[in-house]
Figure 1 (cartoon, rainbow, N blue to C red):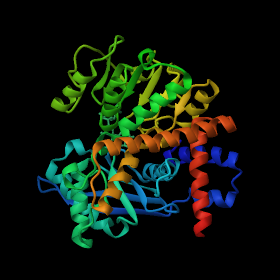
Figure 2 (figure 1 turned 90 degrees about the vertical axis):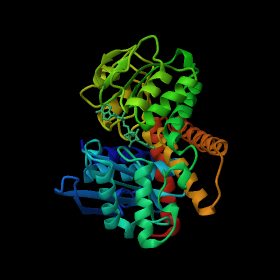
Figure 3 (figure 1 turned 135 degrees about the horizontal axis):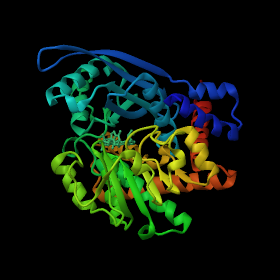
Figure 4 (figure 1 turned 120 degrees about the vertical axis):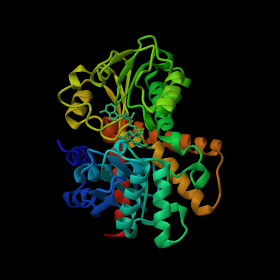
Length: 409
Ligand code: NAD
């Protein structure tokens, strides 16, 4: 199943519970604008490469559109469309005054020099600068992009439109970024994982966790979960998965990644495959790398009873049905990884007010937003006897429907 079709399936399941008419479904599912641009760029060796960049703006009923920019070799229009639509439901679930968008370029950033990356980024901004802006569509980092890339985007956009750092979030802290933005998605995931345990009457020290992906989301999630006494027994990245049934030394793993930019060579653990990590005998599984990693072909091998979706769309709908039938609790991406967009919102607010928040205020505000969204979703799920995913979609869809009706079509 293609990525957008998967989101549509989740959408329709929730829309059925809301008894949403077909005409409103069509309006809410359809993307407002899809832009595909050519990005010609001269490589370091003098070769001319022509890349393809995308920006999909899904919905702006609740405010300016918001969503990351992904540099990855699997980026295509269908995936960007799916991720843009997820952003609409995500910003609505956590009740931010935003809509949803997403962008990407099909490249492998590991194979490019910093200068090539900068040229590609600036050329991409040349092509899309007219359709992004602080009141229109505010990009942010995603897989393969970071604070440096955000700085280039801001600088290039400002050449056309003048000073306005609120055009983009996830910027370096010393240059209009927000304290706590980098850790926000992983931290938010940790906060929510703890809330799930509280509701289930379980304790972190009895909870073995496997985390797939040790990038921005995975590392910060691991840090907070470790500090909160969860027992992390496996972590992974592209180099493989590292397993120790007695618990991994997470501070050492974080240090290793800081030094080597990869987990390759990390000691005191058995090297297993990413597929084996997913099937480990643990209480909690955190897929925090790619989409569609748990699907019809491997769902029956999954032993975890709690899945926290760090990545966007890691559980395919066929697998989600199996989890629902087997009472496996899945905390859906549109809530589980919403910490990033929440602190992006705080960054945008700070930029617009020319005022800087301290880290405590950011962390406390993040906790407030996510805790309140979690309670809404949990309550909806109990009231309507639906999964947390369906409950989250129901809340998101209903808020976007209401905003659409209030402002007119
Ligand atoms: P990242 O690029 O910082 O890290 C990705 C990690 O996944 C790396 O450790 C990489 O080695 C690993 N990885 C890549 N392919 C893999 C594979 N096939 N098997 C195992 N590991 C693999 O990206 P990130 O920002 O941490 O994002 C991860 C996921 O979380 C993405 O789905 C992204 O859309 C989602 N997400 C990120 C944020 C954010 O603020 N960064 C917010 C919301 C959602």
